[in-house]
Length: 115
Image (cartoon, rainbow, N blue to C red; front, side, top):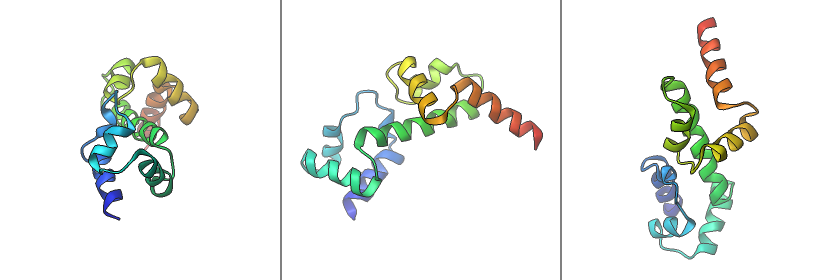
């Protein structure tokens, strides 16, 4: 489905999820359809709501930054991953990863040192 490919490219290649103010209406500019149909596309093809999908992409970006840029402060990782605040980032990270961002970073480097 061409619409899904366009959305996936917009999210993954253009990294639209990094915009803190991103809304469903912004996605409707990528593929000009109404919000209801766009929501259905996210639910059926991405298997999550628009906001849950953004959260997933943002968390993956934050995990990448935590590992690839150990010098970066957690607050900076949060902002560069598209989160509006450090508190929102911290809460989401802990909820979905069952650990804090700092603990995630530490455990990654501990695993790497064992290899």
